[in-house]
Image 1 (tube, one colour):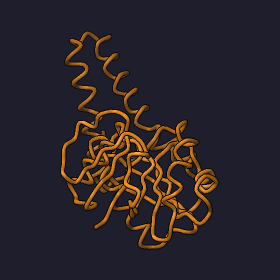
Image 2 (image 1 turned 180 degrees about the vertical axis):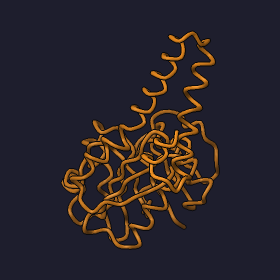
Image 3 (image 1 turned 120 degrees about the vertical axis):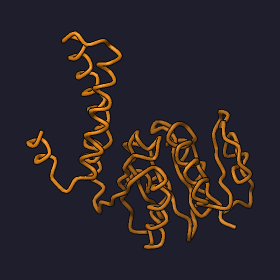
Length: 225
């Protein structure tokens, strides 16, 4: 029986759990979260802290989805799960592979992933990077788990994760600001506020869908408008 341990079940963790349950990612999912989950499934087991986990638990994957500032507490609490065959998958922003290895040990198999907010509806993209202890099978496992949130891509140098954060991690904020700005321009030109908001939102949604489906480059699509 395969066990998956999720540490932290906030907005991103909840989105992942829903995808894992839908895709039968594990026989049992253990979620450590102080708050109520709002999810009900016989495969999902909720405990409020690490002390509530069974002593005999040997998860195949430990997913660290706590806020970055909580990692100094989380890593010592879950280091006991470091063993051959166990993968640690971290989605904590800003916490490097070197930082995770310092807390878990260099023998730990660690993958760091950077998802973005559209992952909440399964339309995100996650970029992953692995340390030297991760096996090919574990790379595939990490990729499959993150595909519950959307597309995936790999990098081989953790230093590139800062650039990834600037493009895909922060990118949705730029897009949302564009929607705000287009809507405001519409209102300033005399459109009713609700119509301006609808036009701005659907223009960006439609353009994104076209960019994803088209064979032309974004530059070619822009010129064709």
